[in-house]
Length: 163
Image 1 (spheres, helix red, strand yellow):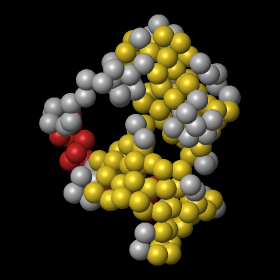
Image 2 (cartoon, one colour; image 1 turned 180 degrees about the vertical axis):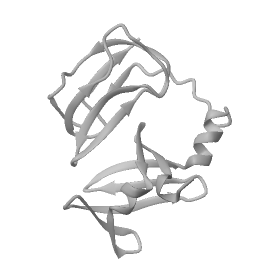
Image 3 (tube, one colour; image 1 turned 120 degrees about the vertical axis):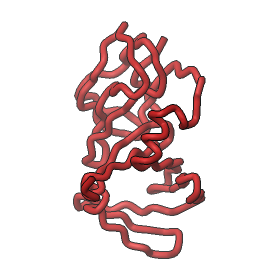
Image 4 (cartoon, helix red, strand yellow; image 1 turned 60 degrees about the vertical axis):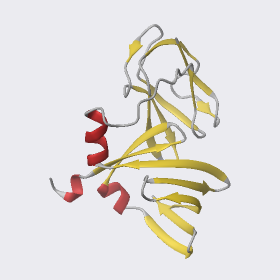
């Protein structure tokens, strides 16, 4: 596999995002102190502070412009192990999906009453000029869609209710 094709799955506060090596390389990171960084992406600059790091577990806690995010990073090996059933097992029942950040609902990929499986895309949320696919983390049925395409949402706002 070409190293440029390498992808990473990043879980931030219970929501999954996928980044290619090329997308990651396009981001400029300026180290201000050992735990403080300035991140520049698509002409937008944000301040990031490293609060905690578990490098063996590939987990970080970051503060981005005053908001705290728990980040878990998975590479191809981690994803293959998960697919083979060696990943962490979760029986947690999820009843609703909330916005992980403020943004604009670009597209809704499900309908009320639809059965969805773990990993299915629920909707696309645009935040900080990036399209973020919001995925489901369990098998469920869509009970109610609380937003519409084109709607601006706040962090924590209810997006979808599940059965």
